[in-house]
Amino acid sequence: MRNVITLLLCSTLLVACEGGEAPTGQVAATVDGREITVGQINDELRASGIQADQSNEELANRALDAIINRSILAAEARDRELDTTPAGSLALLRAQDVAMVDMLRRDIQANSPPPSDEEARQFMSANPAMFADRFVSVIEQLVVPSLPDGAMQRLEDLDTLPEVRSFLNELGIKYQTTMGSIDSLTIAPAVAKQIVGLQEGEVYILPQGEGARINAIVSRQTLPIRGDEALQLAQGMVTQQRATSQAESVFRSILDEKKATVRYAENYSAPEQPVSPPVETEPTS
Image 1 (cartoon, rainbow, N blue to C red):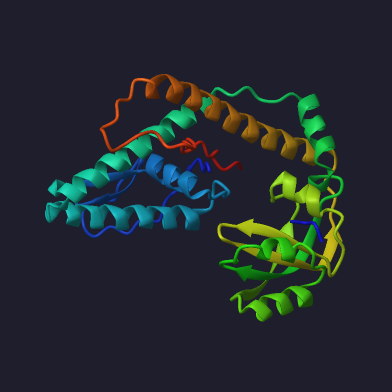
Image 2 (cartoon, one colour; image 1 turned 135 degrees about the horizontal axis):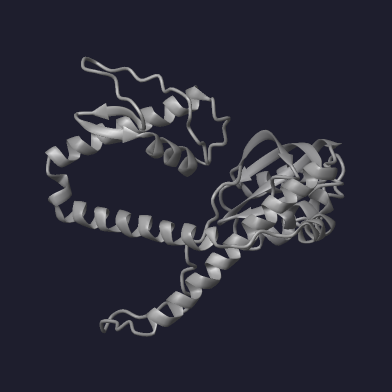
């Protein structure tokens, strides 16, 4: 074995109001006089990676409820003056910086040029496991939180899940067994390429932190995607990859320029392996 929303809300929100006139227009609710807008709900859904139909009031109301809960609890924290404590000030500063970095990333990615049809077709050709050879597999998975030194190399020589279990039990390595499914369209292209040829009973390993997820194919079904549907999906994937790459490149350029001016105290210095900039891409609908 070597296998290692945007939701544009146009519908009426079902908002419960105690006394007074119900909010109208772009105001979805009020909490102690503070307005919560439709824009905030859209942003809440986007941040959650939720994809939904425009008329899905249930998801909209769930997002609104989350905002209301957060608003009430945050107000309570301010009433207790927790935002003025040293720990509170540091937490707020960090949250503000994270939000600004996220806005910078979105701004850069918004200017990423869309791919041509030919670029999308090239992506489809390079990743057949996600399109013409797309498959859905039921898997049995062993979740191993931690592996001792050398164990991964020995696992790679095993071909079946019973062999893997025997090895783990022999060494007293703890693991949990779960069942699930994978769709080659939604996993990393590199992983899809590696496992597209696996048949029932075969095993592949996904390293994870200090441990691994060891998967055995229980059953599989080929569900190809072709034509306009495949082209549209490929365009979205290429757009996502391009936006991520562009943001990473711009972030690197900014960091290289600005970090050259950083002056460290005596006991501090730049790490040998710098932390990668946060350039995660927005969920695509």
